[in-house]
Amino acid sequence: MDILLIAGLWFDGAVWDDVVPELAALGHRPVPLTLPGQGDGAASATLEEQRDAVLAAVDAASGKPLVVGHSAASTLAWLAADGRPEKVAGVALVGGFPASDGRAYADNFPIEGDAMPFPGWSVFDEADVADLDQPARDRLASAAVPVPEGVARGVVRLADERRFGIPVVVVCPEFTPAQAKGWIAAGESPELARVTRLEYVDLDSGHWPMATRPRELAHALAGTGLGG
Image (cartoon, one colour):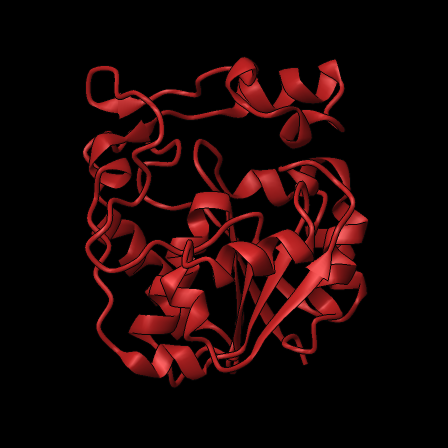
């Protein structure tokens, strides 16, 4: 099965480099996506353009793919489910929850000029970065690309309620499945509260398991039951 891999804020498809061979060894075809505005110089890229690129990847997949979104890109994975509900086998959300219709894609960090630069490690909780040693932090920071304002401030538009029938797995790295269930029950993720088949996978890592636990992340994705 094709597994589309969408990186979160500041990173392109290369952030999945250590996950790709692990998924391939498990019999899948990993497809890491580099979207408009992720290092291609397209500072004017928009959320709609990134969504369209994900939908194009879904259309190009062999069969129905599993769409994986990390962190903020959980919303892009969910937009794929909304835009192609008949073509997506499942959605895996790694360390993130999809934004609701009418909400901004990612307005958590300051915009400087026309983009949202990587803010440095000090703004993240200890649980997010606990398993990132200094070389790993340096490596990720050096690969970080400012997020175009048109992406970060883009408004999420969801329209097809068939998305709620697509199987979803929440991969829980820096938080536990119990915490995730509690947040959803408390109304913090209205979208996931309406999903008819929702599963959870615990992963002992920080917020960037593709950098620190690539083998474990690959096995978590392949073992969800959504990957064939």
